[in-house]
Image (cartoon, rainbow, N blue to C red):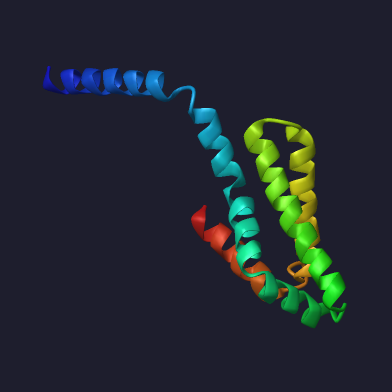
Length: 128
């Protein structure tokens, strides 16, 4: 009977915990889903100069265009995060965040970086 009592107590605790936290779970789930975009947007804010210089050096596009790219990237990520967390225009926010992923894939040459892709696929394969 000791194990059944322990399981019953654990189930009661889990039920009580879920009753108390139920209204907060959707917000926590949304925060987990957009955390990468939020972190990247905040990092861009604090590393503005480095990001701009990298884009300018990589694409030789000039200071103004590199600044515009970093600003668009920062604004797109943070606006998308805010919209998803506030549950306003979530579908458009998700499309915008997907667009940011596509833009970063091209701008940072991730698509053509075989070393990066092989490392990512090897890591994914090892986790299976």
